[in-house]
Image 1 (cartoon, rainbow, N blue to C red):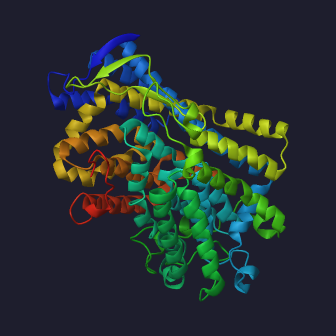
Image 2: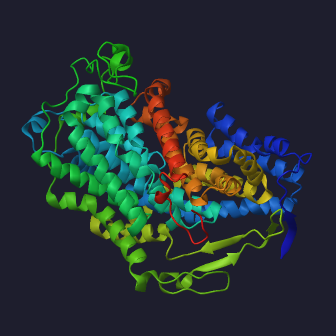
Length: 604
């Protein structure tokens, strides 16, 4: 059944691309203003923006009301399955470890990375601990949960290690960059594939050739934030080991092993590399903040800081949190070092090991993985035997050239990442000794915890799909493609802006993914490169998004001081973003085009 038929027109307003672009951008401007200026709740802002997109689609693009609402419904369905299906089960696995106390065991295991006597005697420890806490541990939390969890957990963990609250929050925010694109079992990549039509494997591989380059430098930045030039001089070796090991394994996993497991593999490999390295390497002196909470005067907060004669921009607590006591709960944790039994440590890691084993078996063993059906009405094998690809009922869209737009929906019940996480969670209940009733309570708590997140993601995906199907995205893509080859430099900025406002790489990809593809085709650039650039650039906007600033401030007990955190991290966000812009631009030229993924459709 077809409710109506809609042919896209990229210039529906006075036959002008410029005027049409001004109208097409209204839903995005609405969303950005409501989130970034009005600071409205995300689900309500998304609902209003969706309503604006409906008006624009019907009034300006002359899209039938039936197709308009049906397009949004298709996007919302994709937002729940497979996107939120992944998030729900990932958070459930995490909540199981919290409910049993094994998350605290895991935290202590990550915190205790050295047997150096100076680290054991000093409750604050050495600078090398910051690699394990926000970078490795945060990456693991990003891989399994995402959506603000890594920032909150890493901030509290750093406070427990003795860091000042605002410094802990700043470090956690800057660290939560490189892992974001593969966060929550690669939800951003999955979303990007859904809105662009490119494969998860190609997009994951391309992002895996961008973010690892930045990963080498992030630990060095964390050291500089904590202890300025002195920190870099004394601890650059473990920082480099941490960054390089993370980069290598994120690249290897995303390109050759498993895109969903990229962050998990990289985080664990990096943690083990730092652990092994610090067994034979020791800093010249342990890091310790002053009794009054004052850091060394050369501790920097941004690339322009770090001079001893500029104490006003200290990266430690400085004048903004000098002398302010850490929250009592954090001091209490730091004051009571615990030694966990080996069995408890194993159980703490067991759920994440179960995730790895399940994903490896399901994605890398051909007899289990099977072959997915190629189109509607076809059947697959292995885990794909029950997969169905259906043509979305009542929706018929054609491009301006009359070519049909694919409006199918894939129901891969068994092979979906969310289902694999559910299986891993069930295995984890046995390993952790959790009974069925307690596991169900934890699942119910997870659903209640995520109810507004589910609604928000479904609305944002509905908005993205509606803009794509109506032609609004095509209009914007044709307009920005006017920049020609220079668009390759500007491409990551779109993702950066999207995440800075929405707080989510997933949302940014759903909003701008199709636009990147359209602009790439018009400018003669690689579609897979531009789509990946949206996600890679987006990860660098997360540290300055209002949502994540609020999460970090709340986690350290300093609600209302988001402005201070913003000033501490915004320079790093901009510098890293410009670095990514330069990298993507070079990848679009003969200088680094050998790094671009070759696609069957000639996407290079």
